[in-house]
Amino acid sequence: MSETSRWRDYLALTKPGVVMLLMVTAVAGMFLATNPAGMVPLRIFVPAFIGLALAMMASAAINQIMDQKIDAVMERTENRPLVVGKLTPRAAITFAVLLAVASMVMLYFLVNPLTAGLTLFGFVGYAFIYTLYLKRATPQNIVIGGLAGAIPPLLGWVAVTGEMHPYAWLLVLIIFVWTPPHFWALAIHRRDEYAKADIPMLPVTHGVEYTRKSVLYYTVLLFVCSLLPFLTGMSDLIYLLSALVLGLLFLYYAVRLRFSEDPALPMKTFGYSITYLFILFAALLVDHYLPVTPATIAGWLGV
Ligand code: HEM
Ligand SMILES: CC(C)=CCC/C(C)=C/CC/C(C)=C/COP(=O)(O)OP(=O)(O)O
Image (cartoon, rainbow, N blue to C red; front, side, top):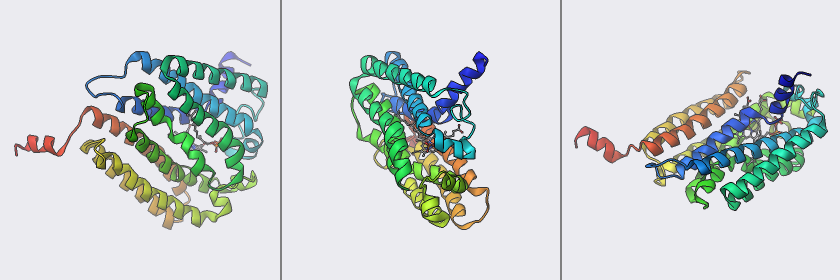
């Protein structure tokens, strides 16, 4: 086996696409915790960025180590490196442990112990509690397990300030309520595979109709929660406008998913969920550094 393909197999083990978006939300947390007159100090940014990314990658690798049998049954995951034997479980475990230890050492000694502790909570929550227990036990698996995936903005915030500010929890809340529409849209499309793998995902246990309704309810909840940064004074008009446009578009997808039989809609909604979260967090950042308030607009208009 060539070195390049081996490198690619280790990379695939870490779910790089997911980790990239998780890191966007963590980096947003770091910058939002910083006075807009300045930047995140590099001596914090570099170890926090590397430490958080390593923890997420390690937890994704452990998820694949634990889930080999399930992944082998589902078309979407049947080509993963451990399933096809491109990596041995022993090599994957060594890799995941190295990443996890490096992450903890970095965060504990170079960032702060609270960041290390909360990251450990996210790590254990996803790699073990969600993967080994919740995923196999209840259709609410991704709602409860979603807390681990929602925590990165708080980790970024705490890395910079050492404190858990309510604004950081607001960002956690947004991702927490975003996760069900994100995942259930995909699960509707992959319903038969989850049934084949005997995983109690919502469309398997409660049916597709019920899941479509649940996606719509959570999308309405997400719309409301996404306005909280503006309503609490955390963000200004650039964010508000972005949240409204992005949220209305998400609602449009969710309503169509609820009432239309178009078989392409679940995956379109899933794809949009990713674009939504990425732009929402980008808007939070732009808004932080370029605050446009009603007073600013009044100034522009000369009133
Ligand atoms: C319990 C929580 C979550 C579950 C169960 C979940 C589930 C999934 C699944 C099954 C996929 C794979 C889709 C495929 O292979 O076609 C996926 C993709 C993705 N998820 Fe999630 N997700 C969760 C939370 C999150 C969070 C918190 C984020 C980021 C903030 C995220 C970002 C992404 C991204 C960017 C992709 C696309 C990855 C790619 O195409 O490489 N997910 N998610
Ligand atoms: C702070 C910290 C370390 C957080 C970890 C967060 C993390 C990596 C979340 C990922 C969530 C996710 C992709 C769940 C899908 O697992 P699945 O097993 O249902 O999906 P699969 O079938 O694609 O494997």
